[in-house]
Image (cartoon, rainbow, N blue to C red):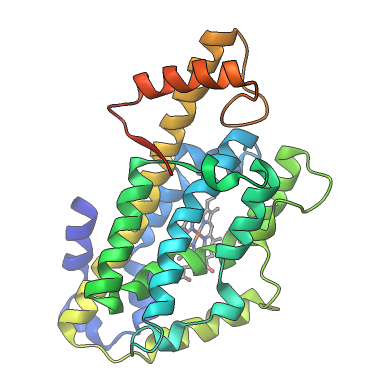
Length: 273
Ligand code: HEM
């Protein structure tokens, strides 16, 4: 992984005096640009996010935050986790459950579909929660500071793009416990900077920051592929576009499209639970 190597290369002895927050921002800068330029994020920025895209994104975010927050909860007294542990202000799992219920109905748990990249991201979070909890810090940084930076805007774009008249289904973007995202991000950075780390731990942590962005980029790319397969197969089987969801609504269509999707995506790996 070229990006991981460059993170290590970028951490020199001279950098060791710099704050962790500055270093994380610096080593992930290039990855941030790449994340912004994924098809999914470009659709967002153009105000062209569709309901199938949003629903698929919610499913993956659910898996990611479930793993991240369960591992953070379990390690909440670890010295590298405790300072950045803000469940009241930041926790997203319940908001995602609410949004999924809104779009998929009360049996949403049976309908959660994620691509292979999401499973790899989840497995990584579980592994570091078990083996090296200090590496949860760069993952929490990547997701939560990202949500607080672009989240408000993305929420408005989603509402407009999907033509939603209320904010139902958009709880993920709302942080009622954070009155000023700007001030909260300052607090979060100072908490990250208070964590004591050896030089090796710091280098590993910066490398994981780049990896965290990489996981997100791969999820976005996989979601895009998954969606093009499911819409194409739906197109072929019914001669029209799936308008309202990731999968069509009548049982026979669900079966036909499900079968096509299963057959055409065995190599790619799409998972239901
Ligand atoms: C539509 C795509 C995106 C746009 C337009 C966007 C835009 C921004 C902007 C304007 C900031 C504030 C920069 C600052 O305060 O200096 C920011 C910060 C940040 N973004 Fe994004 N972003 C996008 C996607 C992402 C993604 C996909 C992630 C990670 C999964 C991410 C993670 C972050 C992080 C961690 C920060 C905080 C950087 C820091 O201050 O250390 N962003 N983003």
